[in-house]
Length: 244
Image 1: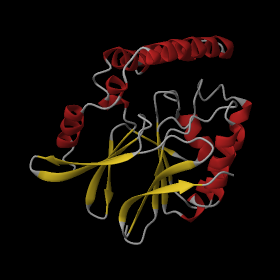
Image 2: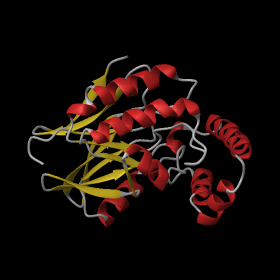
Image 3: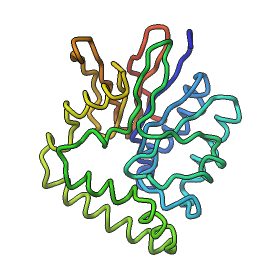
Image 4: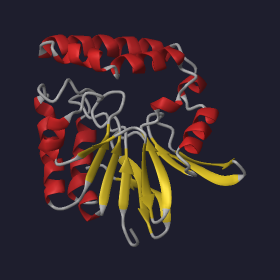
């Protein structure tokens, strides 16, 4: 992977109510990402995904732009987030992307690096972890996908309202990652480098893990501009992507 330029982004939350973010994303795919040797999107690409059989019309330009990127030869890897956990096989076929498990370990020039969306690390938020178990249950998903598009949309809106109410009642610390959970996850995967999103708190955290230096990189949320990490000959470092 020497001289590669591998990009890592997350938390775009694409939806019709945020057209500026959509324009930044398409511009990013057509410019910066087109020159990369690989692009990883670590969850919450979409604010809402009702299933591969129920694509909102506003999402089609993003799907087309991702297909153009992969057709040009740039590998695209996408991890499901807590907003788009219903991404499936048909989405892969439409975009040419490969869905990643969460967590996943990749090799960056001999350095095993753990990739996560990040919500699994927020163990202090017990109510959220219970919700996460529910929506990742195969039977729950099967039942949801058996409903009509209007029924799914109404359920998604209900869950979003409940999430906003719950978030407003929680402290920022509870919704952040738990350091012990971070160390346990990194230790179990035998890594000293972790990249994740979800918390919307971009930073580079350095600490000791079993007496050795370790680093946790947190990806930013997108808005009128984007941001992420680039891996090249200088290692992992942040980048920003200007408004469209």
